[in-house]
Image (tube, rainbow, N blue to C red; front, side, top):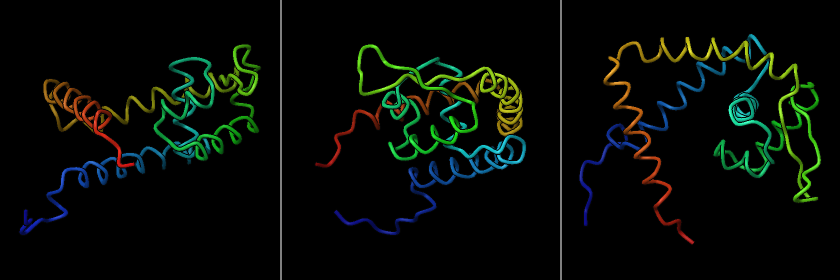
Length: 151
């Protein structure tokens, strides 16, 4: 099969990636300026703030970041006193990570800002379009998860 006139600008995975990066960059600028957080650090905080204590392995899956990025983010957050480790009674090789009181307070400050940024970013879409967009992204996410990985 020959692909003719394939343009990167029309390749949906590329468009999705670039758009995601632009949105993440805008949000990261805000979090870095106000809270001194990088994207991986905020993602870890957001997941812990939403889901409560979890292991680093679970954080890797929940954030869709690699182990090294999650490990670095956790170290920075722990050094800043925003998360703490506690023993995992079910697996002595891992720890539970959770937000400290300071981490919860920062999470509580960030969430209204995040929601306002979401509102501004998606203000060009109507309510039905936003709902449809979320639904479409969820379907693409499931389809990508179900695709076989090359071995």
